[in-house]
Amino acid sequence: MQHHTRTPWKRGMLLALTIMMAFAMSACGSGASSSQPSTGNQTGSTQGNQDGDSNKAKGMRDIKVVLDWSPNTNHTGLYVAKDQGFYEAEGLNVEIIPPGQAGADALVASGEAQFGVSYQESITQARTQDVPIVSIAAVIQHNTSGFAAPTAKKIKTPKDFEGKTYGGWGSPVEEAVLRSIMEQEGADYSKVKNVSMGDVDFFTATKKDIDFAWIFYAWTGIEAELRNEPVDMMYVNQYSDKLDYYTPVLATNERLIKADPELIKAFMRATSKGYQLAIDKPEDAANMLLKAVPDLNKELVMKSQQWLAPKYKDDAPRWGEQKRSVWDNYMNWLLQHKLLEQAIDVDKAFTNDFLP
Image (cartoon, rainbow, N blue to C red):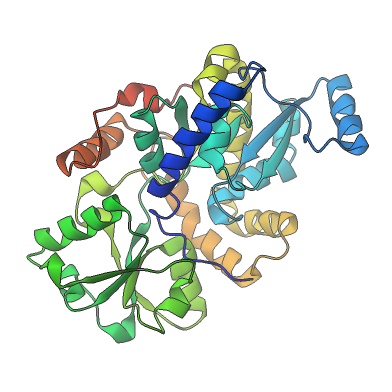
C-alpha cells in the first residue's frame, strides 16, 4: 500500500480554507438542525436503515467519527474502543469514516459528523472565521513532526538546508516555519530552493530532486527505518516551544457541546479507554487496527505503535489533556509572523471538560 508523506501543512493549513467554505455552504443550505446528531450511514440502503432501527430499539446512538487521513497509528485508540466494545458499553454505535473531499473539519463544523480527527493548526485558522469547531483531546502530547532528509544527504542542522531543495506544498505557514528556524540558527533561507512535491511520497521524492521534506516521524520516519533508508530528523519543537503544538487532536462542534454534553462525555470515556489500552498494550492495539484495516503494512503498524505508545500521554496528567499555554504559544507565533488575521479566543478553541 502506498503511503504519501503526511506533512503537517498539506493537510492542515490548506484544509482551513476548505473548512470555512464548506461550513459556510452547509450553514446556508442545511434545513435540518445540526445540533441533532446524524443517524445511520446515510447510504439509503435497506440494510443501513434496518441497522439504524435496530440500534434505536436497543437505545443505541449512531455516531460518526471522521478521520483526517487514511487510517494509521494516530487513530488506533478509536479502533481499539470500537473493537473492545467500549463505545457499545456507552450506548454508542460508532462508525469511523474517511474524510472524503470535504475533509474532517468541514464535516464536524457543519454537524455532518459528531467527531473528527483535526489539528491545532487548522482549528486555529478556522476559529478566526468563527467556524465553531472545538478540540476536545490531544491525541499526542508533543509535536512529532519535523524536517527529514535521507542520511546520505548529510543534512543534520537547519544551516545544512542552504543550497538544498525543500519539497513542500506552498503554504505560507510552512515557509515561515522553515525561514524562522533557519534564521534562528544563523542560516540564510534565500539559499533554499522551495518546490512543490505534489502527491509524490517522501521516498520517491528524495530519490529524485528533493533533498528534505516535513514528515511525521511516527509513520514516515518509522517506514524509513523499516526500508533501511534512515533519515536525519530535525523536530520543529526543538527550535521553538511555540511550535510544540497539538497535532493531531479530536474535535467536535459548539452546537453539539451545547445540545448534548453527555454524549461527548460518553464518547470520550470510551475513546480514552481505547488510547489507554494502546499505551499499555501497543502490540494488542496494533492488531486491532490491523483487523479493522487489513491492507495496512503490518510491520509498519507494529513498529509505529510501539514508538507512539509512550508519546500519546507522555508528561500529561492524563491522556488527551491540553494546556492553554500551548494554544496561546502557537497563536502568538502565527500573529508574530503575520500568518493569522486576528487573535482568537483560545478558551473557545479547546476544552478539557469532556475528558474522564
